[in-house]
Amino acid sequence: MKDLGRLQKTVLDRIKSASETADGAALGVLGPIMGQMDEMHDRWLAMLGAGPTGASESSSRLDPPSSNGSAPITRAEFDVTGHRIRDAEFVGEHLRVSNYKDLLMAVIHRLQALHPNDFDTKARQISGRYPYFSTDQTELRSPTKIERSTLFVETNLNSRLIVEICRRLVVAMGHSADQLKLDVEPVRTRSRLGKKEI
Image (cartoon, rainbow, N blue to C red; front, side, top):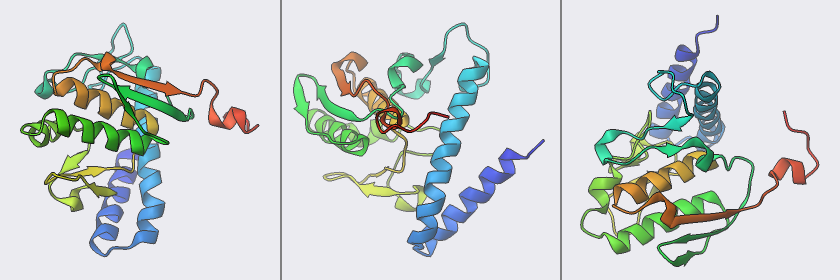
């Protein structure tokens, strides 16, 4: 059996080294590899019918960490992989987005405007196996500085994970996940381009 844990550690060590030396070429190769590893981890858990802790569940729910007090969100809400985002709306305000990174930044800016005093504290509670928000940009693979904040946000993420982070942020700030509305193309991008799905 192949040692996936050792492979993951090797990739993380190389990302850390490339970040320290500002090796953009290496980060450009390693970032997508790590993103695919994260995505495959979640897919394998779903195939096993297991939650993030590895415990079998009757439904395919993801339970966000209890530190932010959010309720479970169903995996079906996140399945945007391969679908382009067309539009988004949050608490009645249209968000101008043309890709999922735009969605993440738009949700962050809207939540900052609505909750200027506690955004940074609550955003830092949103994490997965790795931090998504940090005051130390070296903790992130592809950090983007958040305006009017001491935080950086990880932006080298797949579309499904970005939607999950956005919904978890919305819930952590006291809103309903249903208040974030997404309009995505119904046909997967590869299908539309005539490429075969694997």
